[in-house]
Length: 355
Image (cartoon, rainbow, N blue to C red; front, side, top):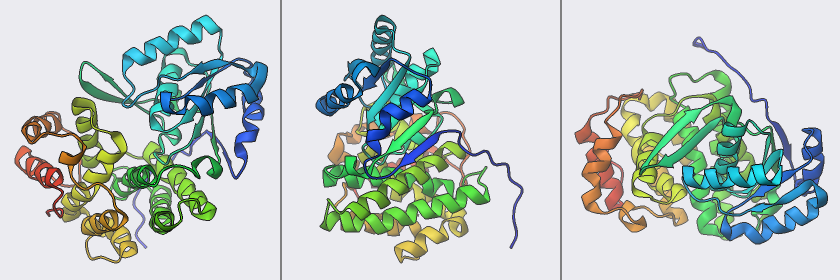
């Protein structure tokens, strides 16, 4: 076995995983030395967030239920005003990537502790990465200050997650691990976690299509989300994530659906240069090509396949390709505007990915 040189740093976050783990929220808050927590959520999950706030009793100063996709700076600034006026000394983000992103944005500015309780599989809670939008563009930063101090994973919280959201959220998480397989700074541990995370979703998602409340499959998917998110926080990402940040930040496309649609195309594109690294993924999907296998996997499970179906206009493709190739970034295969334009065209039409 030929082991390449590598550097590895594990996560400092406390992970609490298991059925009923939500009941340990007060214990986790106290362990951080905090006494006044602001609960964060989206408007859609406000009712659940209010119940959690009530359960926390005097530990909670209330709920800020205005988190939205892509973490607009304006929303963060409004939440900061609530933090200061309430005297909150930490945040608890209850929900998916939008809510977790808001918690990170607050922590980045105030350096307050944060706890994440994810109810989807995006994996943002396991990373020191923050994506924010302002002026129509999305920027990303990496800083240990935005890594939650604690994450509570309770499979029961995702039991009623609609299947459509389950699927796209799961494919979003798989994207982190797929790109980790060929990351420039990958290491043996990141590769092991990426393969294990991918396998967890390849196993769990077909079961959840048939029986969405299957608790073993819910736990398996949440386990996969933790692994895939952790890998995202440890190694660099490439073409797939760049494209999704462009499409989400500049064209306001829904986050998880965008990842689900672009993933097979970006992986097939990079497979030309990273076929050996992607071979474990191809094998678990039962295909010669990882990119084509991902497309078939997503299609069989009923995932959206075309960017045109989630709001991208054909006239936007040229601009998207231009933004995605404006600044240089590492990728295993050379990137140029014409190739990326062709990739986006295939994803816009929902066609089988091109090599």
